[in-house]
Image (tube, rainbow, N blue to C red; front, side, top):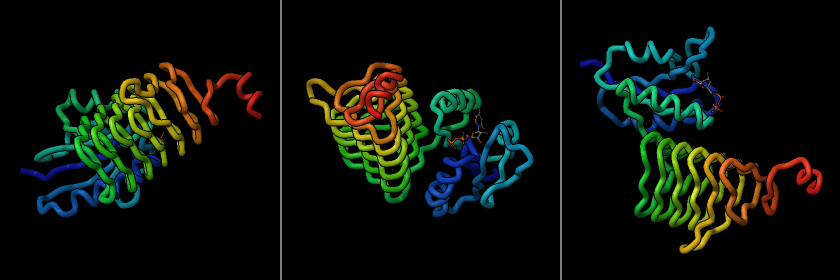
Amino acid sequence: MGKIIYGIYGASGFGREVMPLLRDMVSSDSVDYELLFIDDSIGNKSEINGYKIISFEHFLTMPAQKRYVNIAIANSNIREELTHRCLKNSIELIDIRATNAIVLDSVSMDSGSILCPFVTLTSNIKIGRSFHANIYSYVAHDCTIGDYVTFAPAVRCNGNVTVGDHAYIGTGAIIKQGRADRPLVIGRGAVIGAGAVVTKSVPDGMTVFGNPAIELTKENLKRRR
Ligand code: UDP
């Protein structure tokens, strides 16, 4: 039959933070399994923190009963590309959840998510594919989050907020609560700078910074100095 192989895709910073979370999830399984890293630029390193690092091609050829992957790479475009690569090869994407992450009522999430330690998702939340919530982030009630969204550490996303696909929310950003009839919208591919306080909707693709958050332009940067 062979064993079950769990691969963390990406053996860099985030991957090394996520591996122990996966280890905690599978260590109670009695079945034969192996945890390893998959990385396309492994150089001359063959292991890190006691785990093998192998290429995706090697991963595909290992004898296994079943293979699972989680893509622990912060860049959302890479995540999307590698997600398609996995799905094309019939590899299932798994969710990783720290044992102390809290998920309350009516939360739906597509596959491939990572909920790091101390993350909280409260109630009535819909989240797309491959969501990353880094340590100490929260998502409050009635939020809708798209595909390949990335929350850096300690993001505070309050209620009635809609976040578009591929948005990146920087460390410590605060997103003000929207209204039930008019959510605050973070556009597709928008970038919210570290520590920003977002008080109104952000258009698709725009980068904002500061408190209150404004568009990142040379003039605005000068004005805020
Ligand atoms: N990577 C990969 N395949 C790709 C793109 C990236 O295996 O198509 C690996 C890359 O070699 C690196 C990791 O993913 O080891 C990304 O690391 P980085 O430090 O850029 O990001 P982070 O770990 O902070 O998300």
